[in-house]
Image: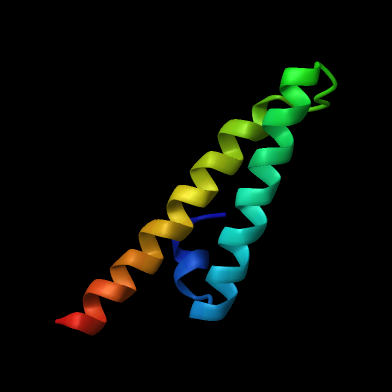
Length: 66
């Protein structure tokens, strides 16, 4: 997803998405270590999505403080 789509989400939705992506990333790394990962490139995509979500949450946090 593009950052614009992430910015349209509510704060609660973003928090939920961060939790889901964190869990997914854990599971993907576990699958890679076991050698059963179906789509190894999904790890990088999940990492980027997680970073985008956290960045937008941080932007909102800084915006509310100012």
